[in-house]
Image 1 (cartoon, rainbow, N blue to C red):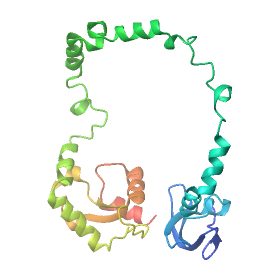
Image 2 (cartoon, rainbow, N blue to C red; image 1 turned 90 degrees about the horizontal axis):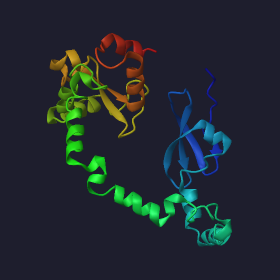
Image 3 (cartoon, rainbow, N blue to C red; image 1 turned 30 degrees about the vertical axis):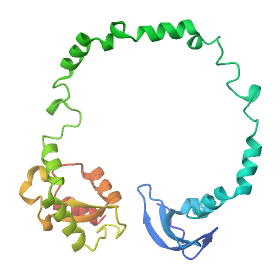
Image 4 (spheres, rainbow, N blue to C red; image 1 turned 90 degrees about the vertical axis):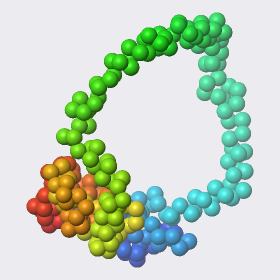
Length: 238
């Protein structure tokens, strides 16, 4: 594991690094930067050092809005892809079978009425009947033991939304793993899984705030379903 290069207070173009933010799943450091225009943005350390990122995006907006630059681009492209300069020149003529009127007419007629098998009522009925129950229940590749319907109803309920809000409020809207507090990137994790603990679904003591990155990392390690407090303690300490 490489040592993090401290970029605090260093300038990269219009950006000044304010503080360290977090590491991503590839162990790459990300930094909270302040742009000269006043915008704060989290940016990876590598694009900062290589010069790929020099602003929050405002520099490109200013350049694109410049009439002088737009006129130069327009003049540079004028006539560049016209006539023989067009890479498709001569390739879309009548020599292409798909462009011949007689071929196009045959293709059009083949798609009309009963000439197209997929349009026939009898064929469509057979296709429909053949798919009934084919991917339902245990036959579906995403089958997880029959809890999907329950969890979908739960997450749509007012009680669940209030539980989620209470967990965030108790944890000060901060990920308990990495201390990130970005709005819109937090999730309420059930300590004891729902598949065998329905009675704890909306128990605030059974919830903990995580950012989406940490939540995904947790389930990548321990899987989905039958999670418990021991797994959480191990995850938080490592």
